[in-house]
Amino acid sequence: MTASVIGSSSLVDIAHKTRSSAQKLALRSTAARNEAIEAIAQALSSAQADILAANAADCDRAVESGLAKPLYKRLQLDEHKLRDAIAGVRDVGKIPDPLGVCQIHRKLDKGLILKRVTCPLGVLGVIFEARPEAAIQIAALAIKSGNGVILKGGKEAIQSCEAIVTAIKTGLATTTIDPDVVQLLTSREETLELLKLDRYVDLIIPRGSNAFVRFVQENTRIPVLGHADGICHLYIDETADLEKAISITLDAKTQYPAACNAIETLLIHRAIAPTVLPSIATALQNAQVELRGDEQTRAILTNFPNIGIATEEDWQTEYSDLILAIKIVDTTADAIAHINTYGSKHTEAIITEDIETANQFMGLVNAAGVFHNCSTRFADGYRYGFGAEVGISTQQMPPRGPVGLEGLVTYKYQMTGDGHIVATYTGADAKPFIHKDLG
Image (cartoon, rainbow, N blue to C red; front, side, top):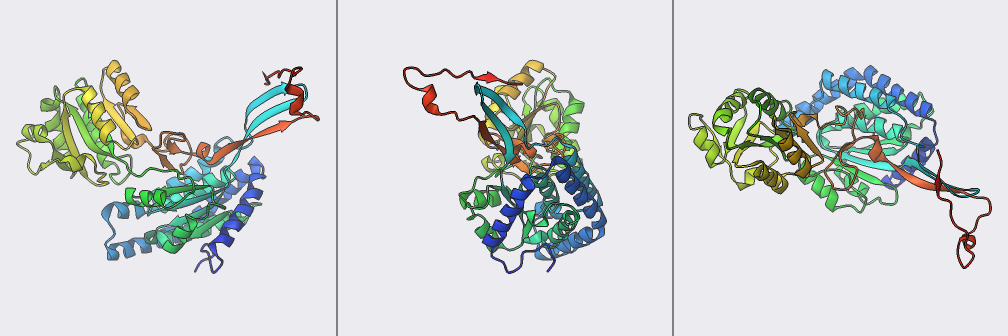
């Protein structure tokens, strides 16, 4: 057992220790937290061989256990993924400090000043399946935002997560930040116990399959940030450019089909379908994508072998694989209605050269991300310039979409007076408030 894994101490003790370390972290300067982030990046780089070897062992074990293909793809951590994750850590260090930002500075009366100032949430509980690089992203964001974090990786990624968290702690040990601010759990029993620690944990962030996220949402009283489904659509409008339509469809489906921002359903306007659909279907089949179409799609693609029948279930399915459902729609309004019925409010896109149609689509589709003439795969915190993300939220209330630092801070109201009392401002001779915003 490595130093990164929790030993015999109870999880309550560990959570208490994490909160205590987080409280100290919240008082550290911007420079101290950024130095810790750089130390983490250096330690991860130094431990690259150990991390990749641990991941290879996890992948070998996953093959033996018959791990589902989408999960296996997420589990794999190669040199390029690790390099990008470490670059993301350094990017987090470059982001402006989210703490201590004065959002309101208001003079209520002479000598009575109100401020609203950003501060950390406290302790994050992050539970994820596969994706060992998530531990890297989240630890960096937690340090930057002054939060403690308790990580719980899936059983399929145990050795990878242990190697990663060991490196993170090694890096923190060279700084003024207590390594106990980052913890790692490894058993399913600890997951269930973590979900009950509402006295110590301020936010749960689940990252994994829809069934996994729903399980977390249904078994905790702690606020949950996340999304259960990633059913994304691409709509090709009648004015779409064919070259853009083909390249964007391919990217959105095949660039990384296991990702939650990959498309699962392609919608095509009836007017353009007979000329556009065969070219798109050819490109998709050349990329080994299994196609399933509605009756009109199959009628157009009569010369294409192996086009499955799309059923109601297909419109509701997140394949996370090289499978795509196709539907012909009569109007843009029909495409929007289909998306708002079956979409998961994650990311939706339209291909069109008509700006009015694009504005209609982007205004009426209810999703965290709505794109015009670009791939849904751009829905990512790193690509948005957040440095990294803790997860993606499809909830209606903010934070929404890829969540970076802004989703890990809250605020408090601070008031300074000089013997002021409320009685002065009530009654017949009540003194008025000034309510003057200060620069």
